[in-house]
Length: 508
Image 1 (cartoon, rainbow, N blue to C red):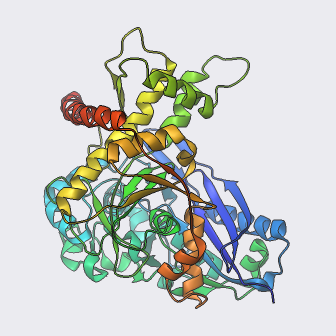
Image 2: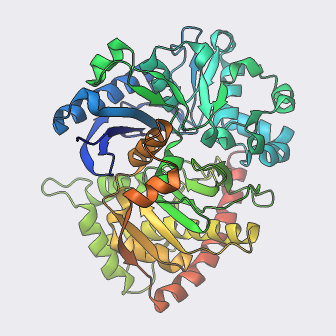
Image 3: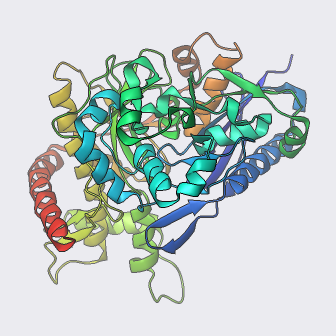
């Protein structure tokens, strides 16, 4: 008898990736449809939500064709997506705003307003300080485009928008799943409900906020039109899904306390898994979001566009002006490895798009400590170290917040996992093993797991994670590297403080 098939889709910054999985966890097909970011300047980063839906349909249809499966074998579809941006939808469920991306920086003044007016209360209730996320973005639309704001029936995220469109739902069915609530600015996260007092504080109409659901809830079924676009049967169940980071954590098997995750993707994310909600009131660095697994939480922080730094370096510095033979990331890794053994390395600040955790919107990147002995390899090594050192600060704050938490290992996913040197540096900074996973497909796998539990193919998310996941290569930093990065972490922390003051003074 043929196995059931589950579809997982990740609506990422670079594109939508669809993956088909057998019920036993075998990857049957994977396809990506590239996104179209609009970046005209002035901090604007937008996407067309309808084009995002097209990429979802196109990727799923290509997967079904590639795998050669019968449409009827697909048991369910799950979608995860970018978490901190928003889409305003009208009564008919169609977008009336573009997708206001998590990378879009126009809401910076409203971050400051929310922080000054009720920052501590927002942090205590949501688990996350105001940043480039839902609250400031909603206020930006309210105050900068009041006419459009009045036409908005609900604010949703790309994953939720795609589900609504696939199922033909209007704004009355608009939803947000609980893994997004720490980014909302207006939620009582522990109780999975909206906080009326916070809405009143900022004059936000609670009716414009969607209903809150579980990731495993079945939201609807594919309409005949959308089923044809996806190459699936009409009536295929579609679950709510979850945020992309929550899906990535799940795909790494972070279904019990003490397991950490490094999402080495577009946004470089470091997370832990705990059994309790604790707001980082002192440092305002770690967000505390609900895990896809009921009863668990993920304290985490991320570098805004941190994973993009590697490709930016390769394109703009390593290959600038070259006519033949691009320098690859693999070659840059080899150069960096050689540089590690040759003298000092400058420090690199990875916040080219502003610091998000904690919110320092005006901070920008820098190399500090350059001299004429430094090569391309030294500069690239510093880029790798910058991401790892930022993780080190997150780890220190985590242990201050959860002093009794026993951390076991870091499981790495995303494109950056393929760099053994970067994994070894992270292990040395974090002082625990970094474990790659065999045959992981990242966030789409987490979305497929959620879909499988939603339609009853699996008893629970920990059960399907145990069934589907296999560990791969284990990386551990040397004692010498641990000593090196212990010292550099203190230097890096001091540098961030100095640069933060510099950029604040420069912009006032």
